[in-house]
Length: 408
Image (cartoon, rainbow, N blue to C red):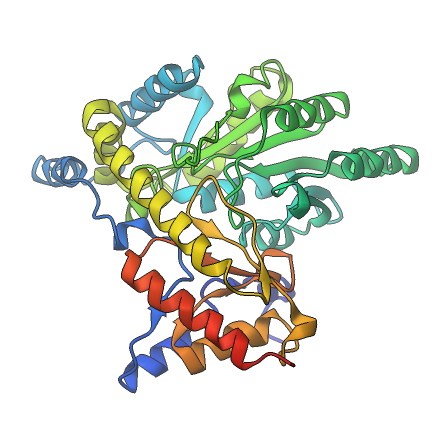
């Protein structure tokens, strides 16, 4: 066999129907894509950011940059976290990556040996599991609790931790990873939940990782709390980037922030730097543009305020339509731009969420993502970024599809 066994883990359920969608489009069908969370498709990247990118190109800033990110972008990141969260970080605490995706690779390549474990919460962002598996790791699955607005089920987590300690397997647990605001559910975790998570990680010497890529896309009166405000003195990593808050998905810029100076954090910073040097650098002109995006707080506030208001309208409008569907249950999101309905599979002439998504694409020409791709079967994910008229049409078609395929 030529291919490696681990190559089988390289799967992205968000894009798995792309071949079918492309064939439908080749045949002249208009496919509405509600599968990919790409705000730049519907909210053009702000002009001031584009102008900064062009300026960097014209000034010849096209050479390799420092492997961990240039001084301009690091200074802007430091200022952003000081301004938003009162966090004082140093240049050496930051590693700029090719999106959060590469930061996830750095984490697993640095920490995971075959047989090591990591705690992931279902539903999880679709890249978390394959990144862990590619490094030889095994997941310990905990849950966001749907009946509690997708907040973390702490009682079960505490029970699992106790069992791991009693069996001696806790030493194999290398990290615990949360997403806040959440993809795919759109939940903003409550502060008291986060405080408990920090305590659990600290008491059990487990590295805490918080993916906060949507930290400014919060609405419906929800309040976001960064783990950086709660985990002082506890080894942790914060993940963020340009894609969502700064509407620059194609820039492929992320960051890993390791704020503490304990022995583990120091080793992580050094090894992340080593991995960054292997791939030389990230996109240089993008770094100058992202630095300006963060520095120009006046323009950013205009852009993010408009985008979040529109997302709130579109998500809430989508919820009204979906609540008319008697064949799903749906929890109201208050962050990011996703909706994650649960299908009443027993009431439908459909065997699972994979068949549901496949048939909606082939019959209604609407592309969704199956919930099992996020570790939670019988759900599907909707991206509520398109304008109201597109969402109206799409979600009413989904509702009608359910009615047509009802058992009764």
